[in-house]
Image 1 (cartoon, helix red, strand yellow):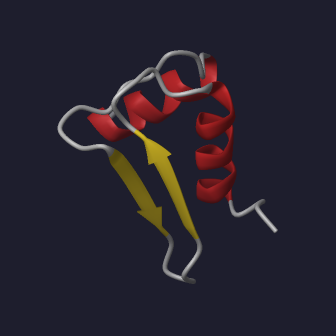
Image 2: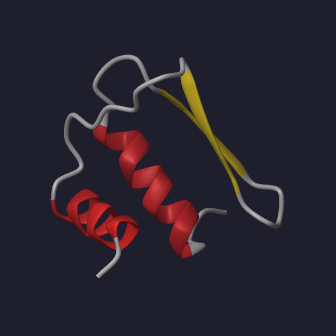
Length: 61
């Protein structure tokens, strides 16, 4: 299993207190143009992790 797959599995198991180092925000952009900006300098709130997973799965309206 790749590191990205392991990280994704960990996010699905526990969406609490994730951090992103080196930037103020991380912006996820899908090929269809949908974006999700996530604040990165503090623990990431569970709602952002859930929205990220929805963005990956394509469930976001």
